[in-house]
View 1 (cartoon, rainbow, N blue to C red):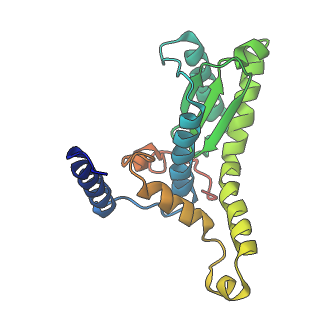
View 2 (cartoon, one colour):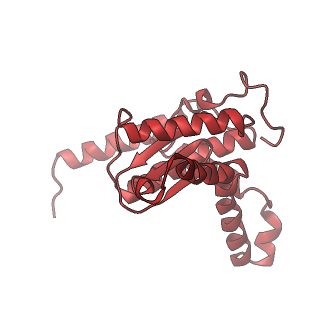
Length: 200
């Protein structure tokens, strides 16, 4: 079996891109807020790629309503957030919303059918912001760590540092080109927001 002439060139280009991207300087997260931001974008991109749903454009009135609700809630109840909140409305009749943490929030267009009024919609959004506040999405990394520890033998467990799961997941997210924007630190409000919670 012979390979087409262009296949080796494509492989060489792909390897070069991965090597150059991996070797390029990148900002590494130093605290919970930064890890949540990286983990949030990585999870958001993976989840939305799997869902493969149409994104409703920002100039749609429904997106404007959600963005206004998010702004009101952040200004009144979630001033301690160190992240810029990015909202995405996906076209799907299911009445659902989710956050992957770190400032990433998504809703399906079906929430409009379920919510009787703007206050009900605000309740749905506030619920997701509460998950974001408690860093709930990052518990997935801790769960993976427990699973890993249960699979390791006693000798391997001695060499494994407990608490490293989140850092490992974040490193993975940063190592794969396109999962996390290189400009992710610009989404952090730590220098301009005096209300940031010390927890972050």
